[in-house]
Image (cartoon, rainbow, N blue to C red; front, side, top):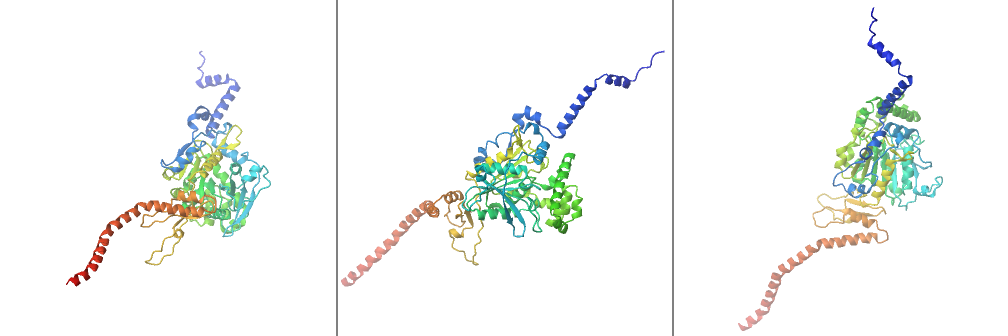
Length: 536
């Protein structure tokens, strides 16, 4: 009797049993590595094989942008490539490493508590250039009103304060580059209690507005610049769009801005990885609320805050109550900076990573940035959220170096923004006042505190000096700066009116000949009348 034919599955199991166990372990390790490589979005192999193509910095700007042509075109870092640290070649590893360690420099700030008009307290943490250069970071020196060192105002991200690793990288390297740095901590952060019923949110621009105004008054000779990170970048861009030409800032940088909060809300709950970030940020917000439980208990839904499982839940139970928003979507729409991009009037560099796990590239306003000649948008394929680690030791952040290079080039150029203040002119009905330099509708405020009119529109061919010429004159030192402005304006007026003066003279001579002839004829007739009478 023939033996039964074995089942194909039996043969397969018999063959598999002949394979050594270590080979199964090898296969399992390979499969796990492939899954892990794709899940964490590693790009080490791509960086190694396609280094020349995938690591370039992509710049978006208007073809006629003077900011790019005269400033950004000289920035080598922005025209180079960003290559991530090999052992951090993943947006998730970079982002997590930055928050859990980040290898920040060691130093201490000088703190100044600023009291807002509504009673709120804002902690301003300073790190000056002299502190870093002296090498003794424990003996900070105060800045005087006569100091002309440029000041960089930093707006932190969500639940971040001056102790965050990325802000320490930024503050130290910027101060080392010759700047004075002040970090404007959000209300209730940095170890400061909330002293009013007002909390910060993603669209709250009043704090940065009053801080910049205070710095302008306190240090009138120091040019002001601003750097916003994450939610702070959204706040900064929104502030720039609201202020337009009126802001005293000379330039700004926005790093990893969420741009459109409504799109970001949809993105952060899309996949498992994004939901993990959403949950982690919610825990951070709940910790922030826990620090100020008495105020939140009185102003918001405390039970809802404790039960929140997402940022949207927290905003529904906390932010909407405190900020008086009808719905969460209303809050997101009103607080998004995308709608303010077109009104930005100061030189602005925006840096974003296309693999940012928190702020999606779908929210980047590409066309709006391209249409505004004051904006240059720089994007990299990799970098994570506020990380951009580079080098084998991950000791530096690429975006910090790019920011310092841009601000350094901008501060030495003629494209720094000059504040324009709308002057209110009292006029009687039906009567126009005599124009003068003190009544001009726009004033240019220079670094040395002098003010000069730059434009007065009227039905005349007389024009005042351009804003660039006025700025160059006002930046001169010496007691005769105001006289130089007056003389230059008079000389320019004479040059522009020279042709008109000759024309008036020519018309006067031509039209004057008949009048002179009539006068001579009248005098001759008067003399001839007596002679004629005698003869008669």
